[in-house]
Length: 554
Image 1 (tube, rainbow, N blue to C red):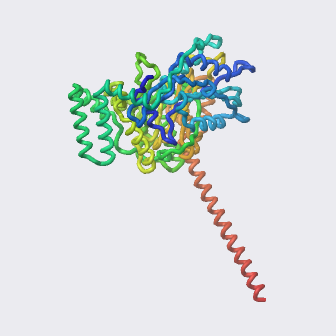
Image 2: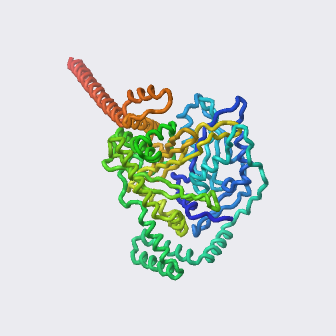
Image 3: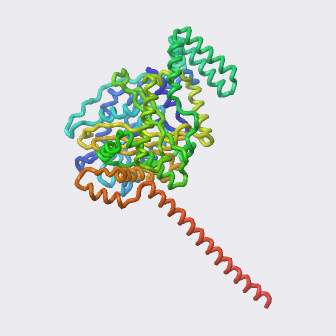
């Protein structure tokens, strides 16, 4: 057995009946020949990989009463057919139907009685492509490890030989609760300082929750004494100070329609743009690709909120996950991520100024992140009580509708392979990220680059953002707005026609305003019609009443 790191375990603790810890990816492949059988090829590849890649065969064993972090063990009852599945879309099989199917799949929790992954071969797409949806729990891999997994399951040439061959492997004994408790005791005895600090942290957190300040203070002082006795007081103080510098702002972010408790259902929408377009805008504005992506998101969110008459005066805040991998890790699959909080200039109506403000905000956030060692978050999670972590998540779920979190949205930009990839001869055309949402933050925008394109994948709560496809289209409109604002030219022979097309189209913000105006006009028209119908009905009723009275009198 291998114990999960504190950060890996945190993605298990975060789960509630309506929030899930899995992250996903949607790969769209060409069909190399009419008789190509995607399901058979995918099943054969994962069957060969299981013996070589730990996350594919290990399942989780949770310590009773949440006394320590869970353990991984190789599943003795592993069933490949449970993990590799095949489904088909009904005709016509368009992008919206694919998005609905993906939303259904990611809206289901994973069964912890099995290794925490599933893959779905999806047939019936209208353009002849087939899709592969991968669903991995965040406790098993992070976004950067997901890119590694993508590279391992694909080839660099259409006729390349797959490097993995099926090898025998032995599942482990399913640990009993007694064995897990014994292992926990051995672990804590071997780490007495951690055990004591963990216990005192539990006492302090519970005392804070209960408002018992004297007990909380006593627990904190005891932790300092223990740390000092172990010769770690200076290190602990440094870590505490470093984490304090980059901790989330305590003030709540401004409210938006999606900053509420989430339900069990999801929506997913996607769009793709040429990566060269983003690079041209990067050069034209003096920022980075990530600065431009953040500005595109800011402009699209501003336009969307304007269209719904819900734009707050204050700028939104985004959480941006950051990989802290060095390439020298002993375990390539464990989570190594941190995050920063950056302001989104949704209060600004100038697209170029939005890019400049995004650049400044990201620089400030990165400077704060640089103050903290890469492993600081991981070290902090190692002494977080599973009981308290789970209780905190559940409390936050109950309060999500009453208190805003310090962030509004998660925005992630994951760099992917630049070279073309193949699966048994089938060329990968696009890899769209499909991330996760949580209570209080019901919208996630993740961008993934592959070859010469940039794919936007948006995930939201089904009821909080019912028109998610409109929002993803506003991202594309914002790119046109930036080209118009910079005067930059798109590459290719059709640049002029594309510029003319973009010039004819209103900006994302104007489009949203017109949409809002149309809604308002429609409401007024409907109200007038309704009033007219009511007036006519009253007159008709009055006439009928008069006729009836006259007849009665006669």
